[in-house]
Image (cartoon, rainbow, N blue to C red):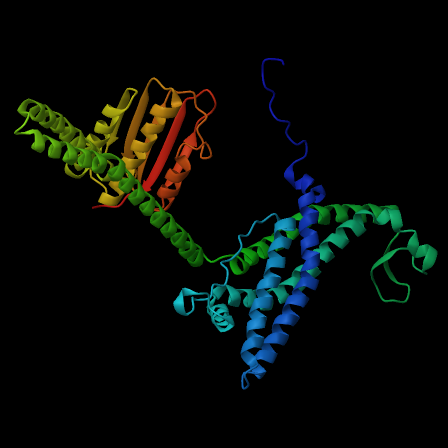
Length: 443
């Protein structure tokens, strides 16, 4: 080790001179060459099945033929996405699947339900549109890219194969123009060969950018027509988030039930039994009865404290009455490490967002107390125009991540269910910074 880092080596050639020899250029050229056979297959299948299905609509067979058309287009679209992923390096997500509505009793729908869902799916029709529109573009891009590539390499290597003309034909070289009867310009002199190489070099410099421009259009078509629509993706995310919210609410209810059963409820049952025994001894042994009542009084205080803690865990009164700043200060006061809280909010967010922010900070501070071995922690809360940001820092040993089993993964899911975000920066050895973002919603 020399004690200092060297800068990464910069390419010696500028991008314009490197492009004709980069792998990207020839991957995209291969994609454009494969465009034609794939587009012919896609187009012929789509037009044939469409014409057959429309022609058979007067009979029962037209509907299943059109359904097979859409299903086949979706299958061929999967091949196109794979080809774009391999050669264009564009990773297009799979579109939303065809989901048939539930049948009677909540079971899965049958074949007709699936067929109806296939016809209602906008993704299916976008695949068919791709099959029709991509064919003329594939013919054009195939012809242009092949011509540019061929002329570039033919001209730049012309001096190597110019001898073919005088050897096997009655011409001295490649004919640029002429009347077909021996007159014209044939590339065969040293000056002609030099001009051919120069022209080939110029075409070679232009060739990569022509290919990349053509491939860019293909990228746009694959993403726009074969990928998931923004609306469908948003609906899918909302359905997934709704499942997370339902699961989280169910888990919270089970936790409250366990806390009540194992804590306050068990203590109240024991208290009732103790008071019953004290009642029986009231006349026989007043001193023992008084002692038992005194013990029961202590149990009542403990039960009330447990109920207060449980209520605070559901939704603390201080958060409702005084807002996020005082509520987080109360949480920090109960932490095992000194915590400095800074809340810079001119207004209060919506109650739901405020509650999520409170429990996010509470859980993160619990992680600091239990796992970080920190001596200090800091909580900062502020607002951007449309986001509420929470940042919790500590000087512990670090190493926190979503897979560490510290509850961070579940917390990230809860935040994601309301379009929130959790970012963790926790290198080994510390410090740890956890930033949470929530959408700002006014009350």
